[in-house]
Length: 403
Image (cartoon, rainbow, N blue to C red; front, side, top):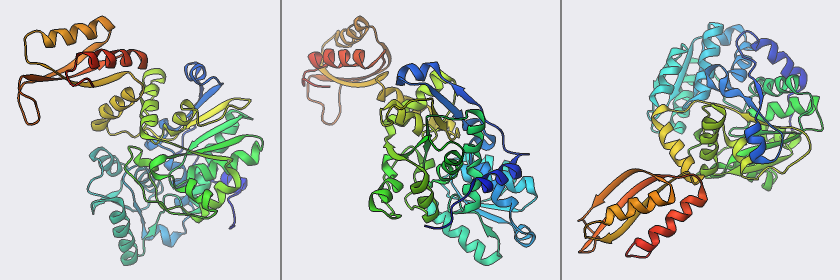
């Protein structure tokens, strides 16, 4: 095991970032406490500058660069949060910054990175190709590459969140932190364990890219083959030796959550807490809501690590969360092609007390049996029980005998 970041490193990082990094609120939630059966608090890092914790590590890493490295400029590769953090830190410190982003990066994130002062180069079809282009640029220019998590200065900077949390609550019982590359969990866990050794720390990964879960099981850093996930902010397939050592030393438990659980948490945060949080940033709350985090004495703090959601996608994300929690349903029903069938369906839904928000009526097409009509509709529902009642009613109406 290599050298670990110390509490002294993290305190120094806090001093370097003090003029830029915001102290984000630690807030109690009576709603989520009731839902989860514990005393739950949220650390609202979604309200941080650039919309995520990334500015913490970027300010520390760039502040520590010697004069020659500053003059050569910095380079980053990212599809979102890291890009914005490095761009703002570089602008604050007067350092030239170039960020390589894939051509598929959401336009709002590209625009935000440029607005923070970086030169943005759109290259390749995915983040891997953007990283390759960034490293080529470093080789050609001598600029300094800012890694998003495999860097002790980044880890120490991200650890200022843990330092700040303990200033706000001296002895939390459990702290739940999302994990992607793992810099936030590594640094924050180091700070929390140094100041409150009895606090249990739980790291949460996306099930589709559970790199550090696989690494802990193998006893060494182990890459995984990632699957698609909406939580692109924590979809990291290659672990860092540095981060792995920190997680093994300080993080008590690693758990995973799936997309349905994260989008349910996103929808609940928007509805109940009035917080816009991205799926990866809501992973910690998703783990608590789904019972992945065992109850322990004392307050439980969930870190909401980021809020950078593409507004073009937010409707889909929330809709998926509502579907996962039984608050929204889509149906296709095959009925005889005779008058009154559509009215029968809408009347049935109305009797159950749900609200039809969309209807499509199809009388012909490939695969549609002669003499039948397919009716597709979407409904807003109160809960899973009401949704199940509609399913049963539609099964009785559908000539195929199923949803």
